[in-house]
Amino acid sequence: MKKLKIGITCYPTVGGSGVIATELGKMLAERGHEIHFISSSIPFRLNKMYPNIYYHQVEVNQYAVFQYPPYDLALSSKMAEVINREELDLLHVHYAIPHAVCAILAKQMSNRDVKIVTTLHGTDITVLGYDPSLAMGIRFGIEKSDLVTAVSNSLIAQTYEVIEPNKEIIPVYNFIDERIYRKVDVSHLKKEFAILDTEKVVIHVSNFRGVKRVTDVVKAFKHISDQIPARLLLVGDGPEMSKVTKLVDEFQLRHKVLFLGKQENLEELYSLSDLMLLLSEKESFGLVALEAMACGVPVIGTNVGGIPEVIVPNETGFICELGDVEDIAEHSIKLLTDEKKHAQFAQNSISRVRDYFRADIIVDHYIEIYKSILETG
Ligand code: GMT
Image (cartoon, rainbow, N blue to C red; front, side, top):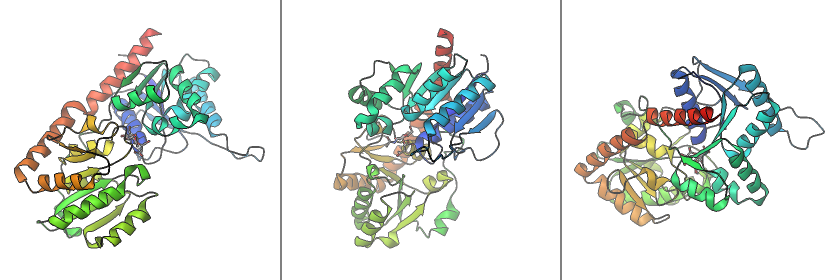
């Protein structure tokens, strides 16, 4: 197949969509395609030089005449410039608003028939979709893209319900690079954190936004640690942090909770853990669940969004109702105290990721998608 020249735009800050966009770019580059990231700052996972990867920074200047800096126009202009100069075949943008709309505008500004692939990740639909001032823009971005993917069937259903686009949307799940996410030796970390061999380790990883319901994680953990020796690793930071800290103090759990903040090398923290809790009220997929599973960590998640498409109940973890912290704790304790069952769930989790969410399977799917739209002309 001809090597492609692909422009990728995503939110460059920490977050699942940025991770997926960047990892996809890296995998495509490894296969010889030429990748051009176009974003306001360098994507956080693009932390060194990679062959076949180029970065184009969008400059947004402030002028007195503008009440708001014109980021969307600056991005569109930059996209058009890169399309022309680098002779791009397609733009793959992550999020309908503003990136798909900017890509459509950029195509009109440029002099090439570049194709546009848009991937929906969640909050563009599940949050912004309900904002009447944005809904039409989201529908436009979806309908005018050449091809649209979404990260779960649940997100597709929600998109049709909320936005009602006249467009086919193809599910393409999140993926992980299994060369990175695997069980590694972490005896040094266990020592560093003074975790005893008798203690079970529960982990939660998120951006601590309200939708992640981190306080439910703390409440469930309170029930767990009342009954078995356990520690909780809280990884990440965000708006709910002070509420979470307060609750931990109220429950007098400080000595059992490790606040680790934002972290790299998550595979080490997963490898230290026996169970992940992902108790969100909105979650279009749940990339962190996949990362944990790849490291052999079963996950208990809520019956929300795409989470049930990731976890197989009673095989790789459990699905519980949103906010039912007693039930979540009960399932956690049963799993953490049954060594044989836990080992089986851990193995099932690794196999599920390998069979369905391996990077090469999903990257192949994206390449098929690119080929299909380029072939139809
Ligand atoms: O979860 C977040 O708050 C970050 C958000 C993002 O925009 O990066 O993640 C979304 O995209 C990820 C990658 O597709 C999904 O795995 C997450 O489930 C999704 N988050 C939500 O739907 C809340």
